[in-house]
Amino acid sequence: MSGRDPTTAPEVSRLRTLPARKVLETAGYLLFALFIFFTCFTFLRPSPYDFAAIPAIVVWLVLGVRLHRSSVPFVALLLVYKVSLVLALVPYFAEPLPTTWTLQSLYLMVTAIFFVMFFAHETGRRVELTLKAYLASCVFAALAGILSYFKDTGVLFVMDGRAAGVFEDPNVLGSFLVLGVLLLLRGLLTGESRRPVLSTALLLILVTCIFLSFSRGSWGALLLGIAVMTAMTFVTSQSRVRRRIVAFAMLGVVAVTLLLAGLLSVGDVGERFADRAQLTQSYDEGVTGRFGNQLRSIPMLIERPEGFGPLRFRLVFGLEPHNSYIGGFANGGWTGGLGFIGLVLLTTFVGFRLCFTPSPYQRQAQIVFPALLMFFLQAFQIDIDHWRHVYIMLGMVWGLEAGRWRWMAASAARSTHLPPAPVHASSFQPRTA
Image (cartoon, rainbow, N blue to C red; front, side):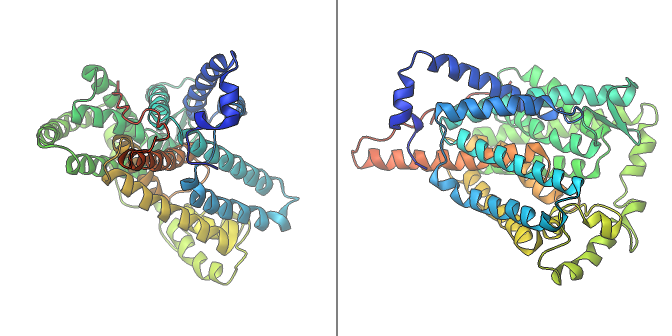
């Protein structure tokens, strides 16, 4: 592990002299962009995401990505959480579903660690590439979701009359799109968008699909995520940008109101909205409902340091926990639950610091972290621990933190007249679509 840029590492320097490095690096970026784009393909088994992930990780390991020392706490807590799942699995290793679920958890852990290593260097450039690929994935998923709602294709998913598209669950689809909305909206609010008309059109597509997912959690994540991102941008911007934010916020409210009014007048959308807009549904209520099961499980888990074991909450209560914090204790015991909570709390602290501390990475942090924070809040009412995009955002937040550390080290070296370690793309401030 090193805080230096990989281009200064001896073994990487030797690799850089090879004529094939430039070709390999180009291939690595292409594979990585496909890796991110295919995140939305959850309905295929195996997924194109996996076919792109393995070669992308291998290529970048060959190219010399490294773990920055600032990411050690994240990796340590992630290991505590995931290793706890493995230990809790031991008595049930012969059961296929818990074993498969645990192996998938370990796979996601590997991707998260890779993301942290990848974003630790050339941070601005790599995070921007990821945001663009993620936005492309969002637009594809949103168009598929809207199509699935209005037309039965026989291929795309619809669940209980709610748009799902290339996702098997409309709740995951709606939440997946939130980061794309924040990316487009921030560019419009600050005037950074080079193509405001295109950005507005894409933004309306994403918001429409989130609405048609009829996911209460996604609606809440969208509204609160926009509020948090806008507040962070407003507080850290100059007066000119603040005036623009206020003006666009008012226009945005009018535009969204008109969009929703139009959607509610189409078919049975209004009737379904009235049903889904209720705070609780029938399956949430009662002693054996979602929230009742969660409450009943707490005293049982307090008495069981080992938890129930991976994927065994459903055997006790007949349903999944629909709460990642309770799920952490149920699947991995006390150490698993505490590891997950520690991961969330530490990432939240790092995220807020990135968003409010001036650095070359503040803008990107103000897009990524509010979306990730919404997932942490959604984890109280849904299981997010196998959502691929959560691990991408975890990697970006901790990669941005590594970039900030390296930028501070370079600034300190300049202030003491020492030759600084190069920080790639430290002032890279590309614009959104």
